[in-house]
Length: 96
Image 1: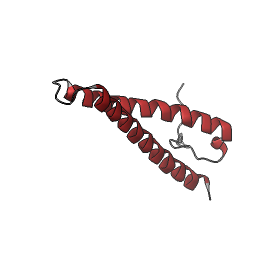
Image 2: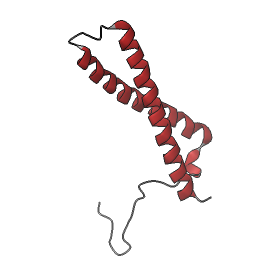
Image 3: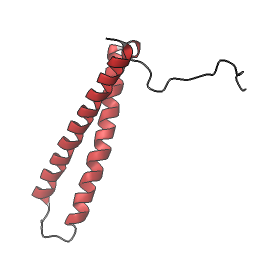
């Protein structure tokens, strides 16, 4: 496989992993919320919103930490193509 295909597969796998982490955090937060709060409480909708925020923010944090460790451990930069490559036009001089 070439670098572009490796990059596509890596992004797809990382996205699936991020979604799994987000769903797991959401279910953990829901389980904690159900056990610690009264479902008839007026604050219950606020707790649901807080659960969404925690699951999204927590999954982003864990995803970032895990990806940094994986990329550095396996030196994936030599196997993956850059997502946003710098493009220079051949006829123009560079601006300083």
